[in-house]
Structures are given as C-alpha cells and as structure tokens.
Amino acid sequence: MKKKPFLLLIFFIIIGFTTCGIEEYFYLPQIPQGSESANEDSITLPSSSFYYASSYIIYYKIYLSNAAPFLSTINLSEFPSINSRLAEDWNNLSRFFDSTTTNVPSRSDFSNRGYFELEFETANILSIGTTDRSLRINFPSSDPAEIYINGTQSGPILRNNNSGFEHSPDRYFRNSSDLRINENAGTTGTHNHDIAPVPNSTGEALNAYVCMFIVTSGTNPIDFNPILSKPTYLGVFLLQPH
Image (cartoon, rainbow, N blue to C red; front, side, top):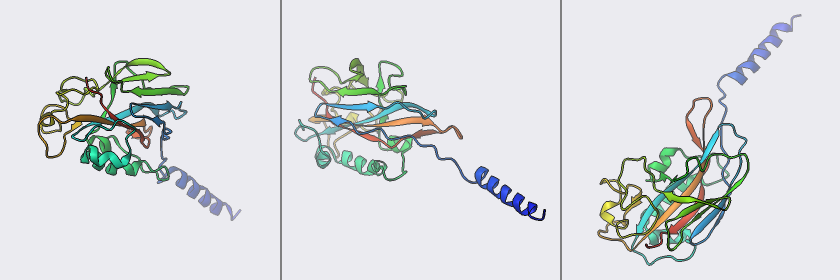
C-alpha cells in the first residue's frame, strides 16, 4: 500500500512529459529529384498520406544575362556567368537542400530572394493527389513554356499575378525584348519584380533564364501556419526568343 503514492507520482510525471513541453513536429517529405535537360524538366509528383499536405508549389525567378546563351543543360558552375545574383540566390537557398538536416524553408525565404509562386491556367493543377502523377515543364523554341500532367498538355505556365507588379510584356515565359529591359527589372519600379536585372547594366540584356524549385506545401494542424517541405531543384532554363 505504501507504494501507491510513488506509483502515482511516476504516472503523473509520464503524463506530464507526454502532454506538456514536447511539441509534435510536422514535416512534409521532399519530392524526389527528376530529370533535367536543356529545355525541360520531368518529375514525379508523389501521392501523400499526410493529411495536412495540400498542394505542390513551384517557385521561380527570371534572370537577365549578357553572356552567350547556354544551349545545353546548365550546371551550377555556370550560374555566375549567367548572372551573379543567380549564384547568390543559390548560395542562400542551398542550405535547405541537404536531406540529412531538418532545416526547411518558409515562404519568406523564397520571397526575400525575389522568388514567386508559379501560376497556371488550370486551377488546382498541383493539388495533392491520391496517386503518383508525372509533371513535365517544357520550354519550346516556338511557343511559351507549358506544363504537362501525366503526359497531357495542361496549358502554359504563368508568371505570378498576385504580387502587385506589372508584367512586361505579359505573363508568359518567353524571351522578348520587352522582358529583357534591365530598367524594368527588380523591385525599384512598378514592373517585373520577378526578374533580376544584370548587375550594373542598363538597356536590353542579351538573354533571359528562369530558375525553378518545387516544394510540398501544407498547414500545421496545431497552429495553422503554412509549412513547406525541403525544396527540390528543377533547373535553370534559357527562355527561347519569340
């Protein structure tokens, strides 16, 4: 009988540890790396059993460049030649890629580097599915960049339209002289906040590239804050002239 107070104490200590001070960690799995070529990327969008996962998000940023065009698959070593800001952004965001750490980005980590969420003509095209799906983004030589889901063309990809800046010349991912004007790029004016100009350069740049990452997104069911998975690099692609 004398052992009961001691046993009750142990019981309440266990209850205390399991209900107080230990927060449950909600994470979303990183999307497996896909295959990249000079003008397209293919990746598998996995189904998810995580009830707090909602969709996939592709983040993008356009970079102007005065270098000769890179016509094959672009390597990390070529980033500084394209635009020094591309290399700087990569160095800042690369800490989230390491699969051996639990370090994950927030949406502000992307927005602070000038990255925006990609949009599509078809609503909810990247919602979480019950089966795996294939995604392919293609940058053809004659048309704006477009997206394919399970091999079916699902329309062009579009620059973000919810961030309060004007798109010059339009929302499509295609290379034009209006898109390459350095004075219209960056956050100092009213146009093209999703484009990085060539540093210390004016006038029309020679080329334009887009860098893309994809993440799984969801909502923390405890505090209802948005959460993201580790990003997966999709590639850097030359926008074809039109």
